[in-house]
Image (cartoon, rainbow, N blue to C red; front, side):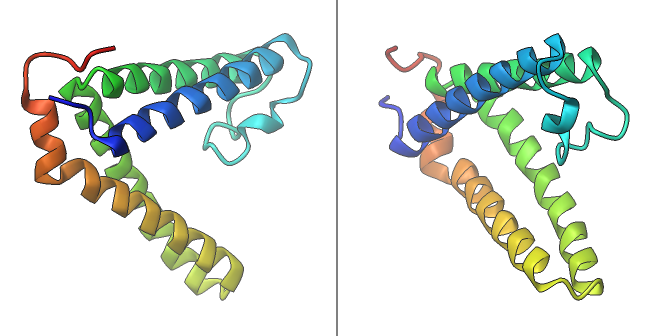
Length: 142
């Protein structure tokens, strides 16, 4: 079965993001930049210096593996991405309420937009045509 266009785009986005994260992780690990790169990832509160760089490299590896799995239509990659997006949506719902309580309209709009994008991606990955594309045991041609 042919790889759906949306899955191809998600795989390419994962490859691009992993490449940026690898570069950032190497820079943080070697001390060329501070661990400011981890701000906003949830890692900044306990990781500093080389450890922060290794954490960024680990996240890059996970994204790279997801990209490869999506490219090859491996169902484990789709399932892992569904779990990650589900957790992301749950966290964004909490952030949405927090932004609303703080009366921060800019944060509220930004979080709502991120939640909408994550929810749409989740819906897409769970849609029957996409699930069927991953159901075949043979991989997409590389």
